[in-house]
Length: 261
Ligand code: BEZ
Image 1 (tube, helix red, strand yellow):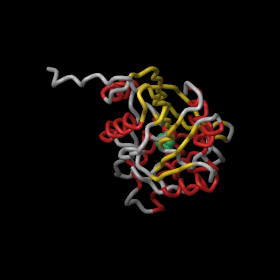
Image 2: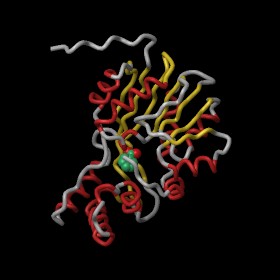
Image 3: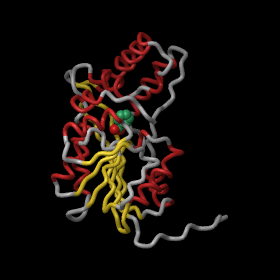
């Protein structure tokens, strides 16, 4: 899924996305590693990887986010490429990714995993986190109710798999899964209008074809529905659930089973 990003707003008002991603870097084993930051966005974690001594390079599909990344970190390499079709022309010790894979449709996940596999050296580490099963369920539920109340249908625009489903996709792609966890991470949003701002920034596809007034009415209605549950002392919290994984490319790839019946 390609969306048009407001790169400055994303970088400044939604900085928790990369701040939480920072702890994911601790899962990387080894030193002086080459690391590909897949879906690097505005480059904050690519920069942190470089500060930790990695030879880090970022790719992202968004020209707007890459422009911000290049402006902030001109010393780093950033390339425009899609996660489901990228080819780097070299292999890395680590492919790292934060808060990206829920944007990729279920049917395209195997292609993305295959490209990561090819981009890794044998024994290379694939370390990532994204929205897992139940992610933002309260928010999407409230939006679905607000759509239905207006005789509209809410199409869930994200992929939030279970640990079992995703570990199996990784294994089918040739990886050995070392850890796979589903973690609750209630996350404080910026500003008194935090939830509406979050919806405006991230939930775009379901509103295609809906005019700006009705869109705003739906967003306000969903937020009013959730105020008691997600707003505490004037601060909004999003019900994030993360799927965090570390998988390794084996030295020798196991042969795929022939049509097992
Ligand atoms: C997430 O990081 O889980 C996420 C952010 C925006 C939209 C959907 C998921």
